[in-house]
Image (tube, rainbow, N blue to C red):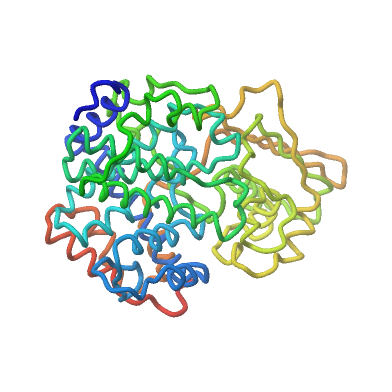
Length: 452
């Protein structure tokens, strides 16, 4: 059976399986940096309380050959994809992509690493599959338009299932028909609500999507059936999730020219909190360097374009987990401490010295500005500060801050543990099947007890 009656799904599947991103050095370099960044987040996140709870609850004690990052344990691949995806996102330190409006790497790479327990392939093949999976995830995000996220869906979860399935379909060179079924099976498992932001369930979304994407590809390869027209059907993905804002042409138009990992590219996080709070973090750190003290401040106002703070669902956090989604807290910590560390966002109650300033901070929206969209140029924040002496300070930040080289972040996140010292250089040069086996062995080690 063919998918000729479903031209959009068929074209999407064809683009996924026929792509050759290794011909683009910029895409490959960006992918290797992103993998290093993800591994930093996941190794540190492996020590999080919730990662342990999840691993125990879903049976990570069961036998298998898939590695659990930052541990000597091995387990079933579906379980490993779930746990490692959660670990990569639990600190909210992992990368973000504007077209996704979410976090692609923490879904796609765990699925691929888990699949390595089932089929031997080269490190280059993993890199290529990751680039293609991200392309599929980002293109699907663009095709949905803005209402998907704004109406409450967490795109990391809803798009991640398809991105992970696409990565494995590319890796295995599945047929168009098999790929279409895998994508449809992934789409029917797409779920995740933004109401979970600030709770243990947000990183659970990433693990869930990694597992679902892997499962979908496995089922399709085994001959399991499903709809072959998830993009074309009148009650398909766009009908259910786009709320009338879909742009189907974005799925394949100029596919890979450039690759989405190159433009608009990933933002590798400089701070371990929600991406939308990073602009005020950079402003706060800058003002600290200028010598501004919290005691001089009467009132702070953040001005956002409409929709830009949709993910920032907490204004007055009670603990560090909630504080990841509070720009008021993030700005206070950045201004007072001059930096944002992992311990600013742990499970402990928020520090009163930071909340005293956070309570003097308020938000507003500039309704005359373009609504925040996947175009980074629509993102800005204006910080207005009224001082006790009546004078004012204003700072504006456009776009998102980020880092280009995650090597130091990797060292910090892994506490410079010697067991992991060779990983960044290996990821930057790996190409063969033997290289990938070596990487998996290095990742499958116990972390230091005091890593996070």
